Image 1 (tube, one colour):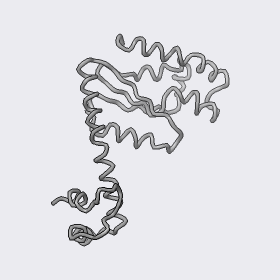
Image 2 (cartoon, helix red, strand yellow; image 1 turned 45 degrees about the vertical axis):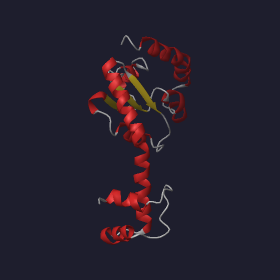
Image 3 (cartoon, one colour; image 1 turned 30 degrees about the vertical axis):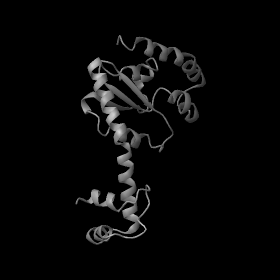
Image 4 (tube, helix red, strand yellow; image 1 turned 90 degrees about the horizontal axis):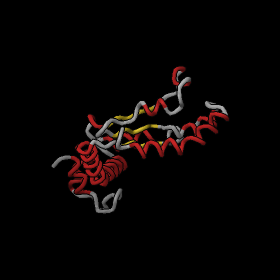
Length: 179
């Protein structure tokens, strides 16, 4: 019996809960691998969370196959403060996806060249090809939420962004089939 199967056997149907009575299998695992109760509980919890995600991962794969067959594109935005677990979430989302059909884009601070261009140009240049999913680790919404707080944009740049963002997104959705 492999280690994960053994862990499932000792799990008592309540996620993260440890068995009330330690089975022979449980004792064997603690002896064989030298694991504490706390470590075993952590492994079981992680295993159960992964098992819970499997149906969703299968759906993402089906979605990716559909996008590829129909030559459609998808953009997924992850926005949040620093250490908001965006990167970890993106890793879980992409774990079983076909690497040929998705890209993760993490935009850094604008370069001198990008500062001289239309603000959204650096994002548009990264938009997906037909059949591809692009996941943005931070997006154009940084201009609305992060940049004003840290002084990375002027009040006038912020106002221009806020006036134009709705039209920008309407253009994206309106033209999605013709890119």
